[in-house]
Image (cartoon, rainbow, N blue to C red; front, side):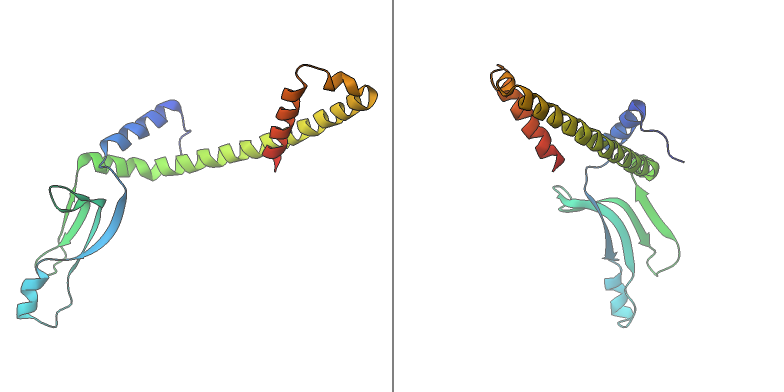
Length: 164
């Protein structure tokens, strides 16, 4: 179940975003450095791979990608895993699970509203065009001589462009 995207919820998600490690983040499979030692003893061994979520940018002090989450296997490929993650990033990931869905729901709601507004806009534009045509047919100089006529024409043109 998602929560409505209230101002409080948006503020909380923005706070979590601000505290988390700067993105973008990417998934990487990295060969375990201990593979080099194992190759000397067992040259035909399958390399051990680690799965990491890292930054997409090189950290200036590390001279490498900054790990966000790293899941490393033991030196002999045993099933024990070491997981490293900063608490701020863990909170961000946890909030993203529902926060992303909430954002998508909000986008869909706004898109539906936009469709409804375009439909209403089209009806109003048609009515306005009909009224202008009727006034122009009855008394053509009434509109052309009105001091706001250029602005009216500009607004109608802009509204027609939006409808396209």
